Image (tube, rainbow, N blue to C red; front, side, top):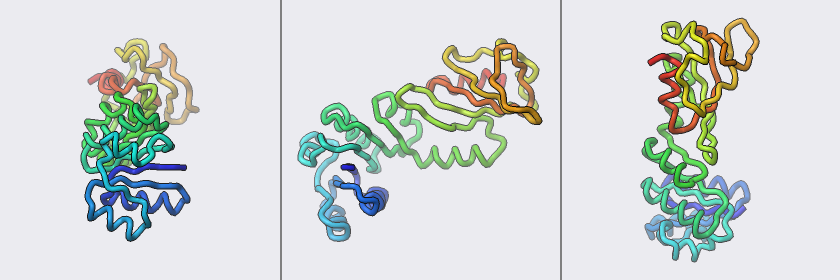
Length: 220
């Protein structure tokens, strides 16, 4: 697989090294000549000096034949531009972008970046799994559909305990997929299903409706 990486910092360097070890064809694009020279001396002639946001640089790099472009610079705007140019001008099938500010992830996805990676979000999601006080956990993002799969746990003091699903002001496109209840087999909830304390519910929710969904399920 021909993979292009934009950004030769620590993350870009180690990612390049790992992908080379797996046998992929890699070209790394880096603006800083010193960094580029260092990478070439250590990993072979795989670093092209240039701006990965510029179409001329990406054309020189042969982006039109790339299977994937991964933008991992320290600047969210640069990563977004590099992915957009690669996808829309050079028709690269898959783009992955590093996102330093997790608030930008939604924008990246709306503008066509296939996969976003935020270290902040990854750490927060791990905390959500480890700390019971976090009611909603992100399980999977389906970027091309604008949907995420989440798990929400109903606390004992939620005002929705004892209410039927049909009574909740859920977002129109939200779908409850599975209920996991203590001492019972998992089941698909229906409109008449009554929420119980400690229920774990798996749902498909539009990305932009997460907070509305959380408030509807918890009564807050």
